[in-house]
Length: 132
Length: 132
DNA sequence: CTGATTTTGAAAATCATTATCAATTAGCTA
DNA sequence: TAGCTAATTGATAATGATTTTCAAAATCAG
Ligand SMILES: [Zn+2]
Ligand SMILES: [Zn+2]
Ligand SMILES: [Zn+2]
Ligand SMILES: [Zn+2]
Image 1 (cartoon, protein in one colour):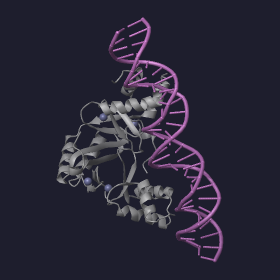
Image 2 (cartoon, protein in one colour; image 1 turned 90 degrees about the vertical axis):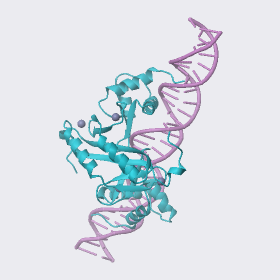
Image 3 (cartoon, protein in one colour; image 1 turned 90 degrees about the horizontal axis):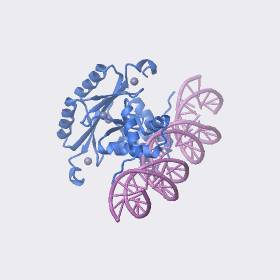
Image 4 (cartoon, chains in turn red, orange, cyan, green; image 1 turned 180 degrees about the horizontal axis):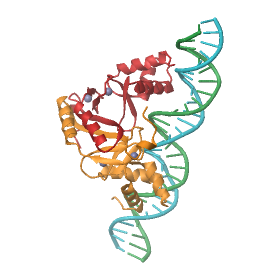
């Protein structure tokens, strides 16, 4: 069976203190910075488990890194600030319905959707360069 | 200035023959399989250029690989088979509207959204293991 | 407490992607 | 067409994230 170790608890806890999405490497650094001796591989494993169990959300950054965040249990999407990482959870029933409808309309099974919005939060707008 | 090489043309051409999104590695294998001597690094560069110029769409697979596809110019989303890569372009005005509305509702500027659906096409359903 | 089983973590192995850099080549120009 | 030069190529090394290994340490039911 699955055992309870201080390492898993440390990861769960550390993830909870983050305001936005973090990478495994980043969380590991953060933990090390707080004096923890946890191993990098263990952080990867713990995050994968948390995501698996639904305690954490994961997504791929535009750069291809896997990012994690402690999120509410229910299915939802994100509004993420590209500058400060501020993340707002979004419920979008209409998008859920649309995704389901679209998938089945084309004969696709077991659909999963990636729906996230990246932008600049009101606090960051003044601090970033104008649009390209 | 930007030069025209048979390599870039080969990549553009090969991308056009793909039915869905492909990775740089995959496209390179495909080209090699067709007798081309093109180098892997060149395929990576050509794909990055095509994506930059808007001739190709790129996205991160759930596994974290960068995938490319020759797509229509206009903004659109995708329905992608996790097994064979079959891709269907989707227009979703309701999603566009939702994204805009949601971003501005929370004070976010310059919103960009990632909206893709991954699943198994009707042809692939029988060939893949059952859902977890 | 004990022992079977799981978990850990340092280090090695993978894997995709990028950087190097000498050799090649496209696109002038005369 | 020959020569020039900066852009491009590609074999290979380097990077960087993630995974695997596997012996040692820890958990927990009995
Ligand atoms: Zn979330
Ligand atoms: Zn912000
Ligand atoms: Zn497309
Ligand atoms: Zn398919």
